[in-house]
Length: 181
Image 1 (cartoon, helix red, strand yellow):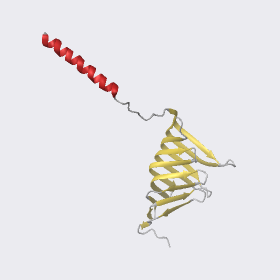
Image 2 (cartoon, rainbow, N blue to C red):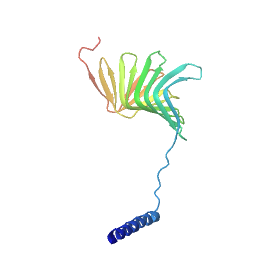
Image 3 (cartoon, rainbow, N blue to C red):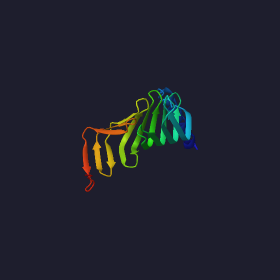
Image 4 (cartoon, rainbow, N blue to C red):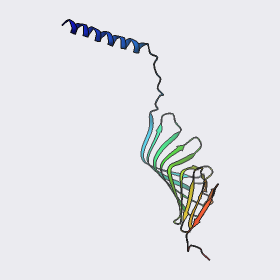
């Protein structure tokens, strides 16, 4: 019995010693976590120009805006635009970030852009500027058509003019029998 009371006292003293040490330690600070201010599922946005002409239709499976942020995180994006020649551009990406401060939408995670039915563009990320009607990517990009594949280190799309340009380290490979004479 003597040993059990001595053991209990030693245990209590050990616990008190631990609490005393914890009390003297400086508190650690954690970064404040932002709360979700807006969360939407199956969001569809239609953007018009100043004359009322429809510029684009954007659809996202899931959108979240954090408290105090001027940007919206999106998942499962599909964007449709029409150029001045009437050709439809479709953009698909698993993720996106819409910044209200500069009116841009950045698509990430493997972007696939289709122009009409004959040309497909692929890149890792693409930023669309709604004010200039331009999209640009500084990551490796490919233009794929029935005639072949052209790759470059940068991509720029002009949605008004209906053109796509590859820049920097551009290389092409063409399929046999696709030459039109």
